Amino acid sequence: MKMLWIRSKNKTKNKPYHIINFVLAGIIMLIFIYSGLFSAEKDNHPIPSFYEELYGETSPSSGLSRSFSEIVRGRFKSAREYNPNGIPVFIFFLVQLFQRFLVSLIIHRKNINLDRLVLFDSLSSAILFLYCFRDLIKVFIQNFS
Image 1: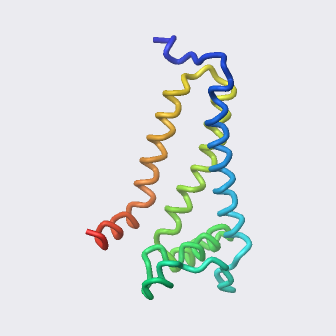
Image 2: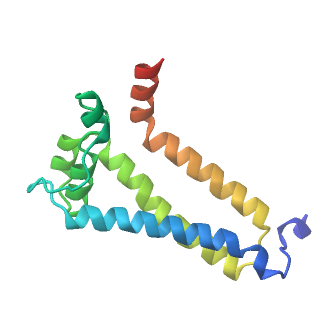
C-alpha cells in the first residue's frame, strides 16, 4: 500500500499543476487587491454588473464587489448588507488561495502520489464551492428551471 503514495522522481510531471496553482492564486490575489483598492463607501468599482446592464434588474450576485471591499476592511456587518452571500464566497476564495500554495508546497516537498493529491484537491475544492456558493446556486436553479 505504501507504494501507492510514492511519486516518481520526474519533477516535470508536477510542473503543470504548479503552474495552474500559481495562476489561480494570482487571480485570487488580484480579486483581493481589486477589493482593497476600490471602496464600497465611494462606490467607485470600475467593473459594472453586466447582468444588471443587460436585463435591468438586480442579480443575486449584486453587491459582491462592495461586500468584498468591506470584508477586506474588516466591516463584516456592512458586507452582509451589500450581499448576504459575500462572506461565504470570500471565504471560498481565501481558503482556495491558501490551498493553492499548500498543495504546491506538498507536491514540491513530499513523496506523494500526484493523482491522489489532485483528486483530493479537486474534491475538497468542489465541496467547498458547493457549500460557500449554495445560496447563489439555489437562486440560479430557481431562476433557470
